[in-house]
Amino acid sequence: MHLHPNNCCPIFNYNSLEIIEVVECTFIRKDRVKNILGYCTEFPHPLDADNVVENPTLILPRNWYGG
Image (tube, rainbow, N blue to C red; front, side):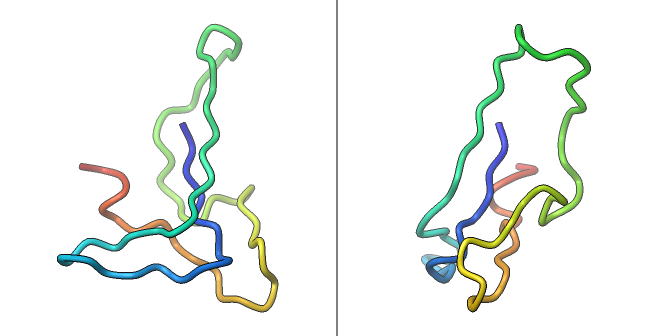
């Protein structure tokens, strides 16, 4: 699965958690793909693109990955 915060809305904090209002999810069927690379370590990912050019790029908050 790949998550990308949509920058149409800002990230907000709730009880010290960063919450993404709109998130895009991409699911991959492992039986259809060879050589799955594993976990992404670069955010934003090079294939991610902003949805609203005028708004700042949103970085996936740490509480959304890595435990």
